[in-house]
Structure formats: structure tokens, C-alpha cells
Amino acid sequence: MRLGTFTISAMLLALSPTGCSPSAPTRPIEDNIADRKRLVDASDAYERGDFTTAYHGSKLLAEKGYASAQFNLGVMYEKGQGVVLDYTEAARWYRKAADQGDADAQFNLGIMYENGRGMSQDNAEAVRWYRNAADQGLAGAQYNLGVMYENGWGVAQDYAEAVRWYRKAADQGDADAQFNLGSVYSNGPSATQDHVEAVRWYRKAAEQGLAKAQYNLGNMYLTGRGVTQDHTKAVHWYRKAADQGLADGQYNLGVTYIKGLGVTQDFAEAVRWHLKAADQRDARAQFSLGIMYNNGLGVTQDNVEAHKWFNLAAIQKYEGAATNRDILAKKMTSEQIAKAQRLARAWRPTQ
Image 1 (cartoon, rainbow, N blue to C red):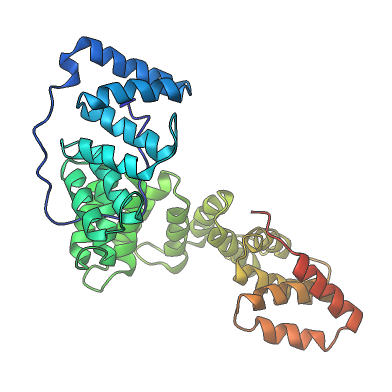
Image 2: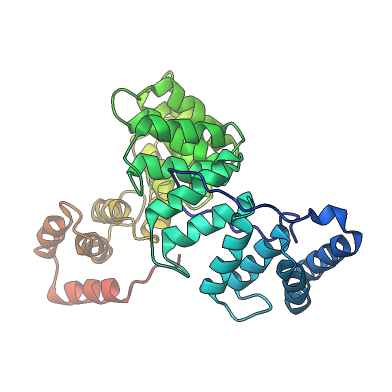
């Protein structure tokens, strides 16, 4: 169970100050062959979905004081696997393991504090436990600690500290940390801005398949920040993000087709990508579709469809959408307007 199968993934937060003073650890489970076998058996049961057997095996070992089993028991209580979901019990077992210095338990206990599950929400406590795990080299905790410093959650805001912790996690290959490090270098205070470094870290995350990093790298190529401007490469990275369903990537890819940047101008392709983004409630794409239908660009000219898309963008307060809708309405019959309004009311995103 402790073989990586039970670890809970990180949220988007962090830890901070004083390190904990773990209690004296129990005898390592490796020293007891019978208990070691019980832990392996419980892990095997968990892997095959027999959570009841996994729970009982873990409980026996957890009550003997083994940190690994205490951690695993916390996971099962948090997920409701083999036992009724109980955040308070999850936090109790995480704490027992965390007090023995278990980094994964410290990390998960930090998440519980951050989200107020099983205890009162407390960012300062979240920071404390994240720091304990981060000091042991746990990349997820280092990343979360960086987030806390960047945003001033549970600790004084400190971009230099955020960068320090992001870099520790990024150097371990954590794609989210690489992305956030790129963001701080790209958009942080002037003292931290370095577009060349931003590109370097965005690229590392993008090459791991992180869609938001691919999108940001596309933006850097589009504008020539930190890299030689190259619209073809911008399109390349936008397409990768768009293919993963990122609305921002789909919208920007559509724009490149409208303007012919890095690709041959193709309004039909622009419509195709903006339909995908609009389907995710992207107001920019909805407004663009209003324009395309109004002018017959890449689609057959259709005032009803144009009115519908302008209306949907206007509902989201997109600038100019309500004005365009109302101007268009003056050219439409009352029946056409009623139909467009019905279509807008009936519209539902599929994603």
C-alpha cells in the first residue's frame, strides 16, 4: 500500500514556518518479517480493489504504530475505501504518521488543513505541515509551499521564497512547479521578471504535456518574449494545448487562422476551433462566432446564429456583445429574434 498507490494528489496550496517535532519513530516495519508481509498483502488487496481486506490489514498495523500503515489508513478514510468516508478519522491517522516524520502524511495533513476537511481551515497550519514534508524533499509539498508564498496564504507573501520552493519541485520534474516558476518569471514583480527563464521553464512543463504551459509557451512565441518571435511555433504549441481541450488554446488557435499567423488564413478552421472553445463557455469565442455568422466568414451568413452567439457572450458581460446583438436585432424580424433567443436559452455546453 505504501508503494505509491495510496498517496493523495496535491491541491493548489502550500505550507510554511516551524518544522514539527516528530515523536520517536516505532521500530521499522522492515525489521518484522510477518508485519512486512501483512503490509504487502494489504497493498495487494488495495490494488485489486478489495478495500475491506486492505482496510483491516492496515488497521492492525496502524494500531501497532507503523507510520506507513497509519498513512494508508488515513487515505482510505479520506477516500471512503473499505470504510465510511470520515475526514476527521483521516486527519487523525495522518497526524499519527506525520508526527513520526512521514512526509506523505505531513503533506496530506497540510491539504486537510488547507481545505478545512476534518478540522477547521487553517492556512498557517497547512504551511507548517507542507514545510515539514517539503524539507524532506517531497516535490508536491515543495510546490504547494511555493503557492502559499506566492499568494501570501498562511505566510507573508514572498516571491523569492516562492521561486525557491518552486525550483526545488521543478528540479525534480514537477510540471506544475515548472509552470508556476515560468509564470513568476513572466508575470511576477519586476525584480523577478526574466522572460528567457520563463520560456525555459514553460518549455520543460510543456514538453511533459501540461496544456497550460503549452498555451503560455505559444504566447511567448507569438509575442517574441524571451524567444525569437515565431508564429509557426506559436501555432504548434497552441495546437497541442487545444488538442487537450484547453479553451484558451482553442481560442488562440482560432485567432491565428483568422489572421493567418503561422498558418494559411482559414475562416472555416477558425470557426471550428472557436466552436470548441465556445462550448466551454469561452465568451471571447462566443463573441467571435457572432461576428463570423454575422459576416458569413467560414460559415453561411446567419443572423439568427449570430444573434444567439452575441447573446450568449453578452450574458457573460463580454464587452461589445450586447451592443452587437442589439444592432443586429434591428435588421431581424420579430420571429427571427424570438428563434435566436430560444436557441440561446436552450444552449448547453457539452463539456
